[in-house]
Amino acid sequence: MSRFAVVAFLFALIVAVIAAPSATPAGIEKRSRTGRGTWFEVGLGACGKTNKDSDKIIAISSNIYHGGKYCDKKVKIKNTANGKTATATVRDECPSCGSNDIDMSPSLFEELGSLDEGVLKVSWDFK
Image (cartoon, rainbow, N blue to C red; front, side, top):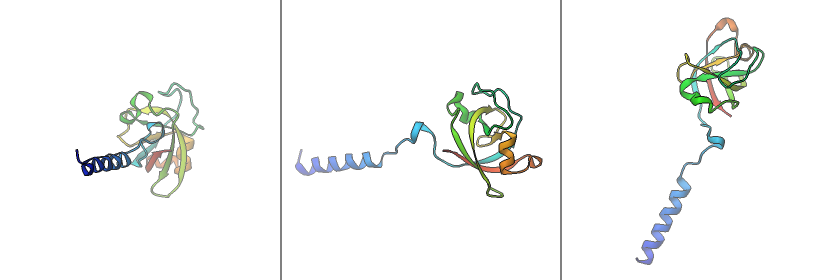
């Protein structure tokens, strides 16, 4: 093989390694999701922990929950209508939620809006 071919191959290899995507810590997807935010009365969640309505927790849709993959992970949530933000912990699964929807404890929901609203448009991502 010519010297040029060796250098070109090594250069291509280095560029490929540098350009390869890297995983975020603990494999958590670092992308913003937009969906509906609702509230529910909490109790024993799918993550195996009992919570109170005053805890700042959420339930995520079944297609993201993946058998508890995200249990106890922190999530940052924003009410897209008023700009209010809050941080919560994943503690439950929401089988009735749409793909990017979340169900929130009452105290968490109240940080973002009024319980009387019932449904908020939210964006959220894993921290």
